Image (cartoon, rainbow, N blue to C red):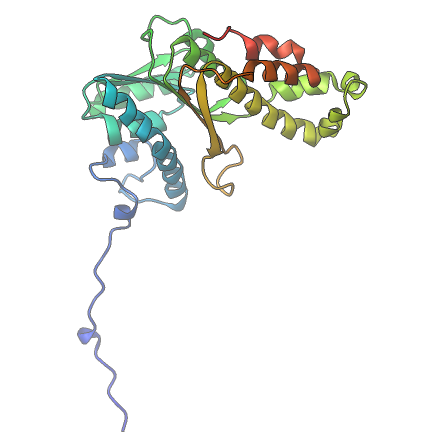
Length: 294
């Protein structure tokens, strides 16, 4: 005798779980995520947006303890975000960690006037009063009176080519306590390697490392970040280098976090200079060796 199939009415329904609860943080502004086009107008989250939000959260994971460290020893905090673009990072940092901490102020630095204006309008609309946006280059910002003389944290997420180096110069000039960099499109060192390639063949067998064009590009990118780390260490920063997210998300994936200790690494400057000389890159000394360590 066959048993009757259980009726649909007798099957308990699974409780509905809003997929947004898996990705949103407590108190996070839905309106902000819609304005940043991370959420659709009807509050949905597609796969591309989920991936973008994951990357920003992952970077916030590294920055949050730096915010806590600064605000744990003083009542104010200033953060300058170079190459801010649409200011995804600045807005989400402010929304998640700083909107209720009255002494904190974020400065977004971007060259595209239309993006600066949109960020200003969005901050005003959301009531994010302690966010300012400057239409200027990273180089110009180093001496700009529109920024305070001391900046606690400097970030540069995918600041292209030498803009990352300018962000480092800005951080040194403003005596930043923490620096967070995700370098992008490092072309300058590779160009100099390429320029002196024939002369380097007669100078050092290490020139085989960048003999082929693809190796010139990749080695130049790797070398650029090595030089930046030595530069920071020579100025009294402790440096950590790691991956930002999995390589399946981005090939521009190196995260450099530097914290000022005031104790320069012994021989960092000499090592940097020796590398430039050994690899026939002396013309870059003014970029990586100046200004003099404090």
